[in-house]
Amino acid sequence: MSPPALRLDPAGVLRLGADLRHAEVVLLGMHGYGGDQHELSGAADALPPDVALLLPRGPLTTPEGAAAWFPAGEPGSPTLAEADAAVVAVDVWLRGLGALPPVVPFGFSQGGAVALHLLRTHPDQFPAAGSLAGFTVDAVLPGDADVSRRSPPTVAVWDPDDDVVVPRAVARTHAWLVSHTRARCEPRAGMGHRVRADVLAGLCAGLVGAVAGVAVAGAEAGEVAHG
Image (cartoon, rainbow, N blue to C red):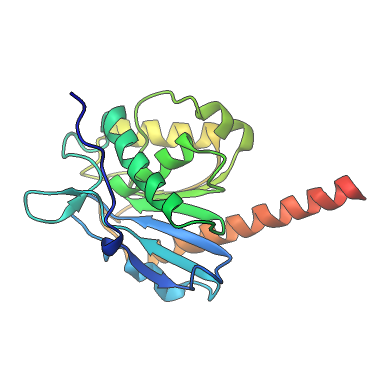
């Protein structure tokens, strides 16, 4: 018997920044294991006025009463089924919001894993993605070839001596990013496995700039095609 489908609670979504009706870009931020929708709220402090920030609470509850995207296990090694279930929950919720400007997922730890899994599962929906101490799922996905073809920009920041995510997951993630995306990889020694305000701000600024660059490149390509 299959486990019940995960569901995001709309009441658990923190909305910051621009109104969705007027935003040019939506940043979709996902917290780590044991966090909640407030964990990445500091990202709103330095966002441009035309960027919306959506921060959902993970669909699972930890024994301590906090939230998660998939069950605790070896950090950096969720099963494909666990990651798929989290992505389906996010996708169903996003579709319920109706038409949106470009949505860029990012996250910390488990949330970074969900952000990258969203990109790999729906490469046509997300123009970029970001990961702060996150990781990829150890599997080859049908969407990976499309990701490579599109080569979307990604921003990834991690501590090479991260004491939570296992080293092979860090190595696997870096290898996937550089082979499938236009990756901006930023190892930060001494950061640890935590959300640091300056690093979070830089990651979000990099994502917003990358999406703007994609939009400009697309417009220029259209002008050439019609020139």
